Image 1 (cartoon, one colour):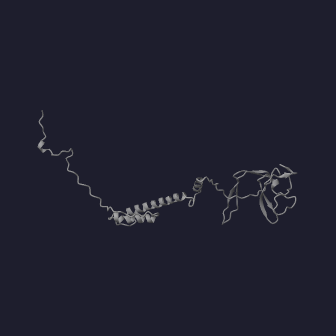
Image 2 (image 1 turned 45 degrees about the vertical axis):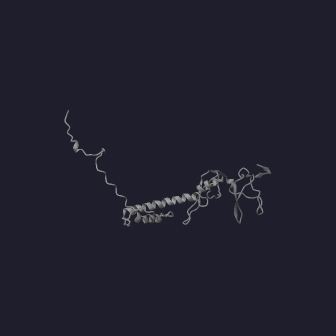
Image 3 (image 1 turned 90 degrees about the horizontal axis):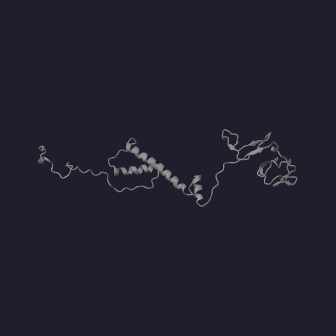
Length: 226
């Protein structure tokens, strides 16, 4: 048996595996633990930045630099900017949840749908167009018409929303006899029952004025309804 080379008298007297001396305790935090007053009404960049700067003397007394070149101040300004943006979004979302303050059409539509009220979609401006043609031509949906533009007012583009066929026979229609004011019926020259159907608009002209009228009933030819 080989002799023991370890002197038991020189071994450290310890009862644990790690015989190193215990580490010194960590230093306690130097940040004062004081109750702080938080302004919950802070909603914009200035109020957020002021609120954070008010906490500096009590939380970090050694931080005395207030210049814009300081990294800490740059971070505070960044946090204030983000807080301002989030506060704006929060207000917008809250306002869209109330019918009195909602400004988006989709928000109003969804709120009204809760009480079973369906809103009709918005419709752009509409105009009636007077057309003169030399031959029969179709006017398809999507056909564009523009107004004359000026230096102060740009031209406005309109699109046809109903398909129509224009005929030269309808360029100008005369009356067989004069009619009194506020009349709802008149006798026309020509057999136009195949062209003038209910729902078609006509422009009535007189020496004094002109106005649009919509045909309500079918045209009568020889007292026979077509």
